[in-house]
Image 1 (spheres, rainbow, N blue to C red):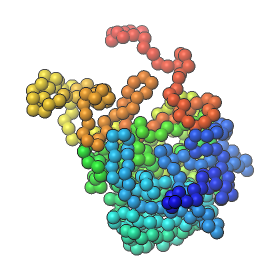
Image 2: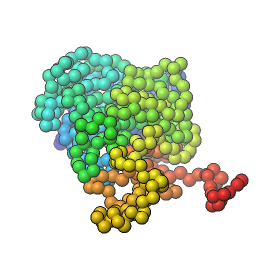
Image 3: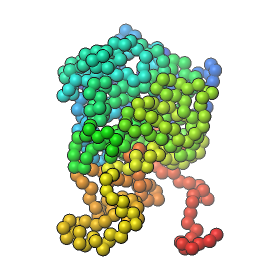
Image 4: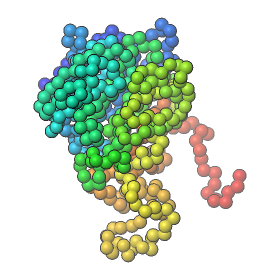
Length: 428
């Protein structure tokens, strides 16, 4: 049995071992009743974190210490069907598995290096002894290929943190080495019913290639939630009335204004911990700067399918060419037959917008380059969703019994926009 399979401790046991207990399941399973966050001494155990398209790292409890094992290694990673790469990650995935523990826990984390070069691990935002901070050359020697190092420290505060290398950092981050580290509070005075975690990242994978390019500084062509592009990203399934937390960590090279439809939220935490109530205010878009984590919380009051996405529009598209002339309004159709003589199969696009790209790729009229996703993907109940990259859906439903995907929302009669005329000169 492999190290990954040994002593698999589920999320409920994780919290029970810390004296907290767990209520609810991380994915499919029984749904807790919608409740408001308790105040004062009305405490209840924290729910486990749901890492979209991911998982939490199991541990072994040895003499009161939680032991984890991270394996840094080359992996095969799929952004969505149609694009696979050779990436670097932890324990078989990028981002690596989420580490969950509880404030006050003593943790011991073994790190085995199976990469072709040295590495370290920095525990981003965690207050710990200097020799455990993981900056290669400053706090410790580099972990050479084949070596295993151990980090051990006590978690003295709660909140959303990260882990990532501080060794050849530009290359190793570009290749996918990062993960979330969630520290639950010992006294859970801000309880939620659903707790989601998302790592924001960008990639440069040139058309026809199979490895990320770490030399690209800002002009990326894939934008991901937990290593996936829409529509391969998991949805967030919520029962109407539940209190929801979304934890976002940004290891990309761009800031991301994250926008939620269908609810007003408060930013309640950063990578330094909980924000005082007096400093929280309602909003629908929160900026997640580079190298930070942001926690938002809201009450899911309105049933429906609500988009959650980066509001930089290029970050919700894949594999865009950024150095081409602007074709909007340019009449090109008469040139198509002449160009096709030299480039068989050529036809122009973009004269009236980019939406036609998805139409052509979906209908197989226009192939993408090898190992390259189309700019926009995904089908909804009313046609193409025309999105890719950093976008998913918060699905809020009345009366949920499980967290299985309930499908698309069926709006009650009279509550959906409808066509009233096809006359371009219509006057109401």
